[in-house]
Image (cartoon, rainbow, N blue to C red; front, side, top):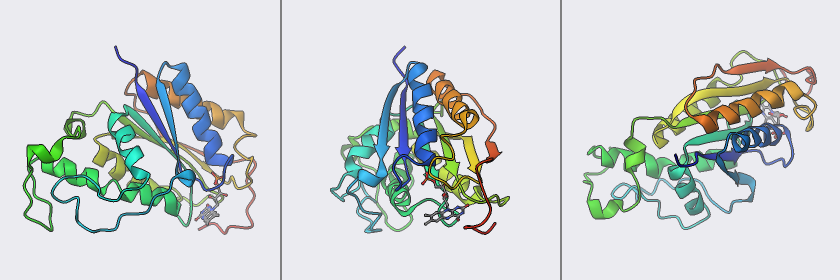
Length: 234
Ligand SMILES: Cc1cc2nc3c(=O)[nH]c(=O)nc-3n(C[C@H](O)[C@H](O)[C@H](O)COP(=O)(O)O)c2cc1C
């Protein structure tokens, strides 16, 4: 059996912070489960967001020649993807959201492969246009996506928006969204590193992801290190 390929997308602009620590642990777990692991550091990518130019409508390929072009093949080959991210205004930070938005080309590709016309154009799929591997976007999903998210507050709906976006992103990739580890009340840069229990949750999840599809319950924790104050509970 070929090795699982697990991709971790580091979404925080802050190196070595809370979501980085969680994702490091998850990828370590995936490695220990025998997976080949790739990390994508969004903060280091020279890339822009979706231009909504519509040029992918016929081909499912993005025409913007920047470092997102290195990300597409990793996403297409992955058997599991972890999004690691802080909560920014109840959503993903701009850089990671830009990467997610650039999956629009894959969304189009999936619809073309299904024979559906994109809403705005009358484009039809041509096989020659689709020389990139689109079948995996349609295959029955044994591929899994996870969210590792950290916020400073403890509002009930702190992760709802991110989970919805993550689910739609993973659906576009042909992955099923399997939940993840979501930590409340962690603001200081080392809050997560100080909590072996959180790191272990992420590690175990990575290990399970490397071994194949497994449903996990979203883990949602209240951080001992958190302190109300600089962020109101929203
Ligand atoms: C621009 C910005 C927006 C933020 N918005 C929220 C928010 O809406 N809710 C929240 O609970 N925390 C918010 N935070 C706090 C971070 O989510 C929190 O500090 C987190 O631990 C940072 O994770 P990181 O170290 O992985 O970057 C925000 C922080 C920044 C810098």
